Each structure stands twice: as C-alpha cells, then as structure tokens.
Length: 500
Image (tube, rainbow, N blue to C red; front, side, top):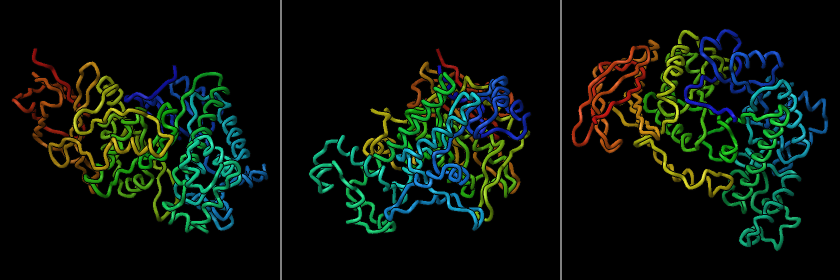
C-alpha cells in the first residue's frame, strides 16, 4: 500500500542542515530536496522518515547543455520561433545565459527528464517529487508558446482525435492532417506580444492549452512510473501545485499528495488570511492531502520583522482547515532587495507545536469541514479540459467563504468524521508583529448553530496548545450550542459529550 499523508504527519520541505532537527520535530516525511546518496536515504529510512527524490521538469541547466549539445534544440519556442526564458529564474551575472523552458513534447527533453529521474532515484528513495511539472505547458498559459515542430504535430493529432466538426470550422480546415496551428495563430497575432494580448481572440486557444497541459501531465505520470520501476516497488508521487491556478490541476488525480506555496498576506492581517482559508478549502475539495508552506516573500516578511511566532498562526490555521503546514526548518526566503536564501526557524519555537499535532492526531485525521467551509459534492475529480476545470471552480463558488467567527480575530472551524465524531478548532489570529507575540483573548464565547450537527451537547473538552485539557459546560437552546473559553492564546481543539 502506498503511503499517503495524514494530518498528524510532520513534513519537512527539504532535508535539514541540522541532522538533530528530525528528532526534535518528530519528522515523518521529507517532501523534496534533490538527489541523495544511498547511505543518507537509508539513514532517514532507519528513522522512519519517508524519503523523496526531486526531479525538475522546467529548464535545462547549462552544464547538461554542454554535455549534451543536442539539448539546445529542446527549448520551448515562441511565436517567432525563439526560446522562451523562465521569467522567475534570472541570471546571476551578465555572463550567465538565460534559463529557457524545456519543451515537454520534444523527445530530446523527455529523454533528458528520464535521465534525471534515473539519477535521482538510484539511491532508493520512497517517493518522487516533481518541481514545476507544467514545464513548457506554462508558456501556453502565460507566454507565447510552445510553437515548436513537435508541439504543432502533436496538437494536430490531438485535434484529430477529438473529431469535432466545430473545431475544423474554427481552424478553417477540412482536415487536421498536416494542420499547422502556427500559421493560423499568425493570422491573428503576428508576434509574441500580440499573442499574449489577443489570446482570447485566437481560435482553438482552449484546446491548445488543454493539449499542452495533458502533455505535461502524461510526461509527469510516465516519470512516476519510471521511478517506481527503478526502485521496483510502489512509490509516492508528489508535485508542486499552485492552488490559485486551475491549470495546475490535471496532474492532481495522479498524485499521492500535493505540495503548495500559500500566500498568507502577512502585511494585511487578519483580512489577508481569508484568501489562505479559501485556498485550503480549494485543497480539501481536491480530495488529496496538501502539504503547504508560505511563499518566499512571506518568509522574507517573517525574517525581516523577526516575527517567527507569526508562522505558528499559519501552522495552526492549516491544521484547522484540514491540511498540513510544513515545518519551517529550512524554507526558501526571498525579497525584492536581494536574491533567494534560506529561512531556518528555531526548533524551540516550532517543534512544540508539531509535537502537539502528533499527540492529537485522533482529533485531526479523517475529519471534514462542516458549515460555511464545507466543500460541495463534486460529480467528477477530473481536470484535463478547460470545461472540467471551470466546473470544479464554479462549484466552489467565486466569492470569499469565511469561517465562523467569535470576533474579527477568533475564527472557528467545525470539522466532523463519518463516524459522527466532532472537533471544533478555534484559532486566534490576533498577532502583534512588533512584539512577535499572539494577543490572547479572554472570556471568548463560542456559539455554534444547531444546524451544524443537529444535536445537543452536555459538555466539552478543550485541548489547548501549551495547556492541559480542561472540561467545560455547554449551554443549549433552540438555535445554538454555546460555551465560554476563559482564554484563547493561539489554538484550541474542542470535542463534545452528548446528552443521551
């Protein structure tokens, strides 16, 4: 049976530079981190830590191009048949060449990707993690590409299989045999900049994006199968997924779990966290565990303000929303005034919170959101076409869905299991950046609509982070069940006993 993620797992983004950190945190999974020697992998396995190797399907490094000159012809090409630079990877000096997207439909690039998977899986890790699985498919969404010969031939075959007369009419063609999409596009947009600005007016644009996304998905799945063949056994398959871009979703049904950078808007507390809550709701609807972290810019805020305790709020919020926040032991940190570097949080700050999560896994695992954050029943969990992705996003709604609140900064997250068990998460998001402290709330009244659970409660037990469990009384009337928490510091989980 393939291992998956549970809500009480403790996940590291990548290997720790401090070997003692694994024991301090109670680490169970290392989500990514490149290629490692067999002795390192085996050492983690002996600590019951699930190990993964990482493959990058975005660009080709200069060293590999020098070793394999033919890879210079494996780049994604724009409308003008020029290679497309990866905009977020800038040369470190004027002597260094641009990083260009590799084309996932180019046989040379696929062979390159296979070599990388063979190299990284050779040490026997238990999973494969894919960084930037879209590769050149991203250029179909945000840039002008890819219009190489391989993509044009592949797209013509893709359209032929759809066998739709309306598509032939849109293409102004009698057959897709030998069809050249590049020539059709140039009747609307003569250069890359026009292609981007006139995208909505270009015929067959949705189908072209679908084709590119399906190609990227098929490439990632084949690499996962290759990885399993190399280790001769079942593996986990994970990938970085942007939950703000539905185009990332086609691979999700094939994954064991997802990894995602979440925007936490630290400069706009508390309102900015509502978008984070909505992203977690989106994640729950995917029916795949999501191991989250903050964006590099968010970590730069933490670092520059010496506000490491703010990340404790983010960790609690992720658990309250039914997902996992990866331990900030070594996470990418960047800011506009300097390049990327690493933020390494203190185990003294964060490990007690992860120990609390591990201790109370029975209050976290297998629960689903109830109330305003509950996700609808979806007819399909398939995302290979624009129509299916729109159906999914439309079902979740376009507006902001908010948690129940006791105040502007005390948010309530009711969750329940199929066996009827209930766990209410109360998260205090009030935080003073200047003092690096949460602001405790006193005598907090929690009122739950009876419509949530349709039952009355006799008492409740409160499991508070950094405090011993306590029993409290619950008041019931015709419309609500209510109780008072003497103090909410950061995060409480409340369970209930029922009237017979």
